[in-house]
Length: 425
Ligand SMILES: *Cc1c(COP(=O)(O)O)cnc(C)c1O
Ligand SMILES: [Zn+2]
Image (tube, rainbow, N blue to C red; front, side):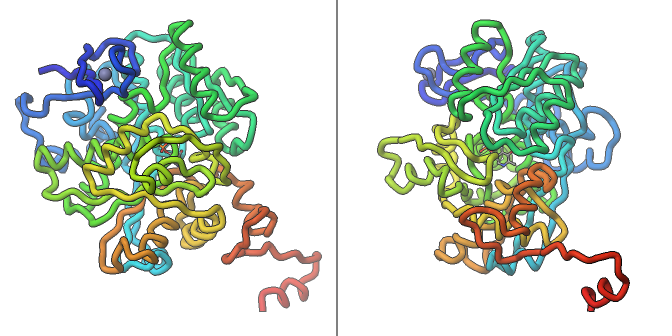
């Protein structure tokens, strides 16, 4: 059976080549559904392990290595790939001790071509744009989606159009969107409003939307789980911890984990912990209130990648929490920046939002949800270079409301040998 689109609420189905983001019958989110039983080659650990280290396109990509699970019947000639994925899995005792567990793995998605996990969703999203013969692609973005889309659109000879909020965009991300040649429109509105605008404009002008409401984005992002579990020799950890903004990644992880379980690549499901900033915590509040009535919030946090008050993938994230007996936790900006300083100081580095994984794991250990003996996989979503202002502001103790516990002061000296030596003694 070929792949189809299916509404997660009413199960209405649509052909795979329709340009559609939500269900026409009920407005629900759509899943891309593949038939994993039909292929001539069965889906096994050996199939994917056999492709490790290959130079052959598209299987050298850490997304397309898992093509049978990601987009089985797409023609290889349509695939737009920058060999994304293949990111490292670190085991750092220092960071594990900070989190309060014996065993902590960190999957560093900041090692993707444009410095965030968004590349994994963009290779599949732009590939689908090519399948659909679209010339223009657009997104609203807190920064990383635009950086990634700008790159992949340029690489595929398409026009990328980026709707940016005019408040608090990290310099590294803004620079990338401009550098990769996207049409950048800075709009006097926050992310949530920009998201509405991009959908309306794209509808009118026939532009393909590449925000994570686009289900093909999530198909690529599932591969973070495939690859991490492959690196763990297909042995599932007890917990997976991930930051939550628009909740695309959380949703993709749920779908990917369930699919891996169903085809027999793993023999148990890890529990998922979604971590939000306490100033951008709509899912956390909803979770605490037993999913009764959802209320968006006015988002505010230094972790701009998750500064989102009305996440588009809410329903898919709730489904994921059910599938994985998941939990939601919140952390303060101070906790985020202190965790980031520990991750950075261990030589790995990440952007503020990414540090939620470690800050959140630590909090869940304190609260007793994660046991010190549990194995934990945290996902670092973005690169340390994305937001230099936050890093420098932290170490200079110039961030309002944040007391830096792990400051690395920059020392000052005159052109004087003795003075410099004294500083180092
Ligand atoms: C996009 C992004 C997030 C949030 O992911 P969602 O899928 O929107 O929940 C977190 N961290 C970084 C670095 C990001 O770029
Ligand atoms: Zn529906």
